Length: 295
Image (cartoon, rainbow, N blue to C red; front, side, top):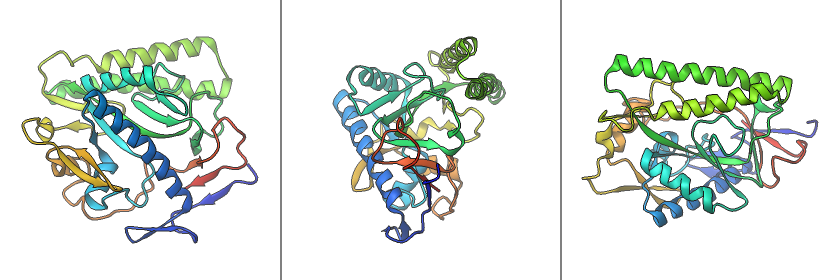
């Protein structure tokens, strides 16, 4: 770790993006994420699946016509049936260096899909000491939208049940990092991952007309208003880094729900992931000495 250097947004030898000086490292990271985004969009167009830009990526498309200058990832959502169709295709057809990361393809505990580039590195700083063997290439996130109860009390109880499963998963994950591969704990973790995946789909065959991204049930902005995605409206596309990409039909409503009515006012934040150990040219399987931290 002695040769590791710390890279921030505002350094020399960078790029100007929406009036902000962007480090070369961040630009390289974005380019790899855009490569994976192009792959996902091409697959969706090929198999007839609708994706939507979400969260910071949607906000970036509206406010910057591309990445928010301090953002570090790409977020997409799909309704459950289309998400499952997309995942099924990727299981059979993705080839190296692209990797589909879902709960049953490696030992990660993420409860949504990530498309990773296995020939690169993106390790969360808090995971540096982990004795954990999941794919940690640069990624983009894809979240399924599942039905949840419309009744607020019933919905809160359901989300609390998911939170309890997730809390135990994280507890076991942290123990496994410290105590290596304990078979019984690995078995328990696999059981909990399967339980979470089963429970999150509990209401999908009902008439509940409320939807949520359930990878993070502890967050209060995961509920999606189905009216913002209605199919009777023509598809809406916005420019993101020179690409015309699908967004919710009433995208301003989605953004207001997540960020508030003043979502067009830039507010710099450190990002959900914190600092990330990045190498755009070497796989996460190599040693750590040549990596840089994206702040």
